Length: 120
Image (tube, rainbow, N blue to C red; front, side, top):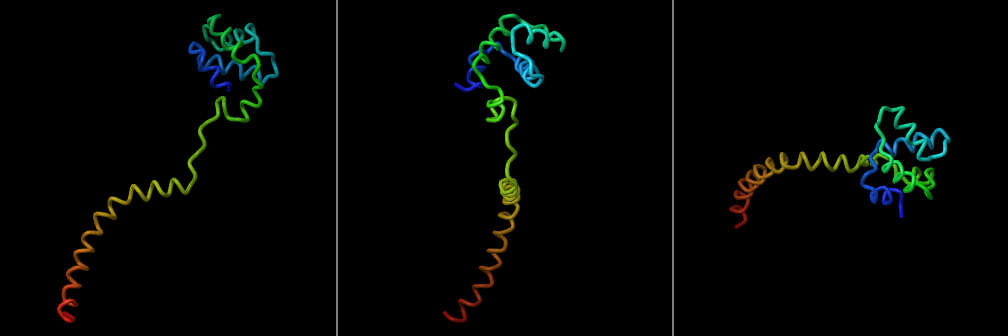
């Protein structure tokens, strides 16, 4: 079960609690109920004991470095490649081009009628 799945099972865990755990991890501190509570209080967050316990339990057997490397925690969605962005722009411009095309087709039809009379 991934870290994200574990945290989803605990609907009472909010991002402040996850951030507190990440701060502790980055500071090479052990993630315990007491340390998470201390970080939350230092940030001015009124912590709830049940939420802190749920977070610590959810992260108990998790290698946070691996989770971060996998992008499971706090990683932004990857940016769309430039090719997809170009396609989106082309699609946005497509209705304008389609509006112009029927006029050109009508002009082609008019010019083609004279040739048909020559060979027909």
